[in-house]
Structure formats: structure tokens, C-alpha cells
Amino acid sequence: MSIVIVGSFKNKSGILEKRKELLKDGCNVFPDEKFFEGAGPIIRAHHFDKKPLSPSLLTRLAERERTYLEEILLCDLVYVLNEKDGDEHIWLATAIEIGYALALGIPIVFHREPTDQHLKIISRGLIR
Image (cartoon, rainbow, N blue to C red; front, side, top):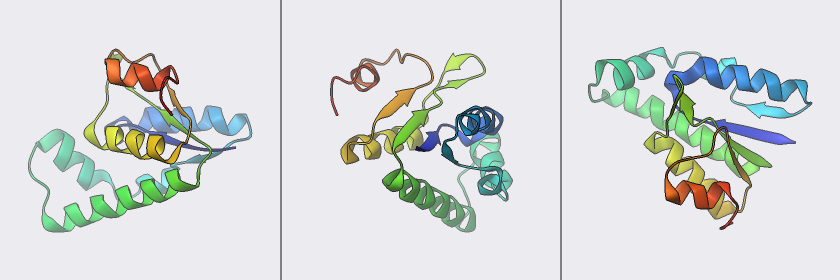
């Protein structure tokens, strides 16, 4: 089974920890550590500095998002890591990835039950 984990890049450690768990179950899992190489400046500027990304960083972010969407297109399941620092958390990019998977008919599993009513509809399989 091929699984794509979506969630905030700021939660890299959580994504990679979940990846290890899924690999033990024999799954192919994206992203890997290599995907995060070089992402530090993007994560720092976007999540910590709260500044608009420079054109070069914006291009790099677009390339990473394109890679994510390509991986979702090929996967069997999308796993939404919607928790960060103990709180429910969905970034806009994650919401886009969820919508893309939903449009493709790819099953979506949430790490924790969402509180948002629209996400609950998805998590409970009421729309596919």
C-alpha cells in the first residue's frame, strides 16, 4: 500500500515518526527525510518569520507542493496528520491536498477526529 502523509512542514518530526510506523507495516510512504532536505529556509520564513516568501523560496515551495500532488495522484491512501503540539491543526496547503485526494476518490484517514464539520464529513466517509 502506498500512503502519503499530509500535514504542516513545521511538524516534520511528527510526519517522519508516523512514516516510521507505517513503514513497519510494510507500506510505501511519502514523504521521506530526503524530501525535507533544503526545506529549512521555506519552513523558517513561512512559519517562524511570518514574512512573505521571496520569489526563489516561493518557487521552491511550489515545486514541493507539485511533488506532493504528484505523489497523492499515485497513492492508495492519504493520511492526514492533523495534530501539532497536542492541538488539532490543518494548514491551508493540507486542506488543498485533502480536497485533491477527495476529488480523485482516494481514501483519507485522519490522525485524530476533526472538529471542523466539513472535515468530519470526510473523516466519516460521508462523501467520497
